[in-house]
Length: 226
Image (cartoon, rainbow, N blue to C red; front, side):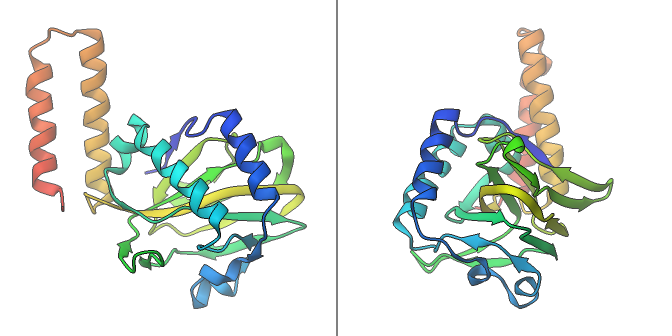
């Protein structure tokens, strides 16, 4: 399940983010790569302990929690502190699967990576290439979103970033552990949630609103891990 979350950040926020990111120090992106990923990863990244990364990452998490689409699709339990990367001059990231577990440096806590998130901080016309390509059951999905939008996808997915041949692709990336481990179950819950909202908007007094809402919460009660 691939979900686009629109306008996580406003254009004004994106502009402020870019000014701070452009003024700070970047390091080799291999610092957070596993053994296999490091062999195909070529980009720049901010250190997890960089004060700018910490400040902007907290702002992203706060913005995500205000997004009904994100909350409904992800059902987040733990969010790994957002990281930031940059691709330019032909840099790319070959096919890989994200590590199954991540350890947060700030707390030592472990996060199971159920879902991966990329939040775009460059407009599509600022760079050539740089598409995030995700393999799923429907084939390859190529993602290149407006600045401020995010894509949410299963961390089990094989994916890569195409070479950036002009300009620079700047983004935030991170992972989260969901209260519902199964992607199939999260997908069903999201479909039901959206249908309930549409019914409540179109026919507010329909008695099925209560029945379907009860079914949603009873399914969530069976599947949730807290």
